[in-house]
Image (cartoon, rainbow, N blue to C red; front, side, top):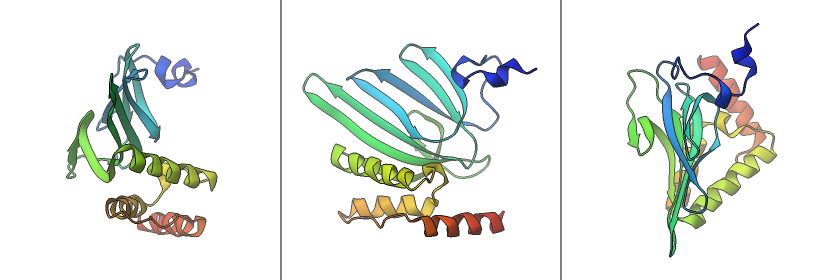
Amino acid sequence: MNRRSSLPLSMQPTVDGPPPFATLVELTWREKRIEYWIRFGRRTYEQIIDRHHRLVGFAPDSIFAFVRWAANDYGTVLSRIDIVRAINRGKPFQTLPFVRPGGDILLKVEGWPKVARVLEIIDVIEALGIDPCTVAPDHWRHVHHRLATGMEPRTYRADRHAAWLKRRSTDG
């Protein structure tokens, strides 16, 4: 019996280290000061460094949302969400703080009103029963561009998602 596979990721031994070619994200949580967390994504690796820091990993070509928020005594100093596709070996990528080596940035939004809007969009997608990490990458780019220009993004629909899944299955 493989006891390791029955344990949550956070309790599994980390002697082996992250899987090969994993994209690693450094997370920090200091309540009401620095809160870096993953909004969605399928983790393939997790290591608890100490009570405030973790390292999580994502398989190549998987999509995840990385939220960063920080404050000081005077209020919020950073609000940001990035939706990133983990890179595959030998593929080009963009660098991103706390993400090693980097990734394909599908969406980059700064400022709390826009971050909150992206979080609402993710909630709507989940309400449709769709896992946001399976959404068409072009949709996240669309959301990025529309929000950057002050326009409202189109709603992601179940029929568009079904078409994306069908197209992806025939391409691979």
